[in-house]
Image (cartoon, rainbow, N blue to C red):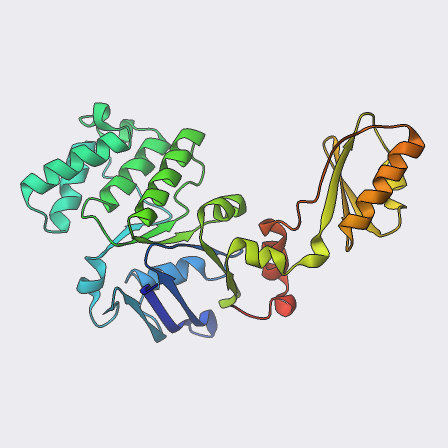
Length: 314
């Protein structure tokens, strides 16, 4: 699979502060790459360099073969961008906002009208196309911004926290559109704080910490490297003291989540046998039991706070 975005040694320094430190990765054609990291890790700075808002201190970034520094127009005309903080022009209608976006990309009038109708219908905004944007809800404004970024059918899309604080309907609509674009061969660079969103939406996940890339792999591959986080999740027909289960051989610690108990262990198979014995001895029924393995959230928290276990990006 070829690279739609190629990043080599990208660096950004603000006086003595190194915000992004020699970062290298690629986003493949048709791939959704999730870009995660704690606040201040360098996520937004990286995206701003990739989209031509900031000039790198060092390294380079190519978008479909066009250098974002030496050929910014060539790179930008091939990308769509939804920044973290963005609003349509509030005193303009949806149709006017779409027309303005189309004109910026040099589309002919007939094409602008056709794409505007297509996208506004897809994002459930067609019936409100003649309302000014300031009358829209937050979710509607975000859907309009995404529609504007897609009017020229970009082959690369940059999204920075596109579903933050949105209602379920708007979030699902944006997720569906991202999957559709990926299926058509577009590359999507998806910055998010939502770990579960990255887990279900992204083909690969990159984690940045203190300006350095500390991991890059599929969600499942990242989770599989954290074997010590294995657990058995069990619920019983009546309340059971966590301390009793914590005393079972092989249990490192226990966490209670609602009616379920998470028992962490290095040997989940053996622990399941001990739980069956415990249930029989205590005359209590096991309602459910499973071994979910580590979550992407656990991987993220560990890598975001301590790079010693990551082994660097893969």
